[in-house]
Image 1 (cartoon, rainbow, N blue to C red):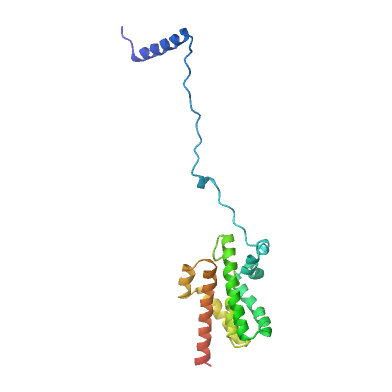
Image 2 (cartoon, one colour):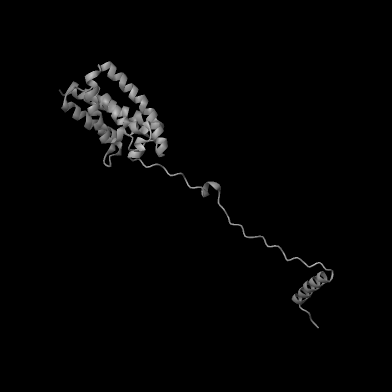
Length: 210
């Protein structure tokens, strides 16, 4: 008589269970490990912290934010850089009444240093080192331009248009430093270069055209 291998294995298994029951020691059931849920790396499981949204509450939450956003001018939904540059006009007309040129220049140096700190703090808070709403760089740079521009509305208007043009298109070397420098100093420095090019064009116009 032929016995299949499956029958042999089945009989052996039955014999072992019977033997275990005779000895009084029941054969334990095989342990089955519960399925473990796969968890990815820890850095994938933890969501990134939400970045604050630049609004009025954000601007008022820290002196650095208030300064960097030009008192709120940087919240303009349209052309915040232009809005920030316009803020420099009333500031200039006010300062020029009380400060001589040397004092005004020293004030601009102080505003530049303050801007490095304010833009650095605000950029880190927003997760963007050169957020478009930070306009203190435009304000400070244009104050420097107005200081060396003839005190005439036509000259000031031309200076405004030239500065905005250079700040937007960022010709060399402005574009290089805008891409290379980071932090508050980088934010302030590229607008300082735009101010220099603006004054250079105004000086050339005055020397060779007028």
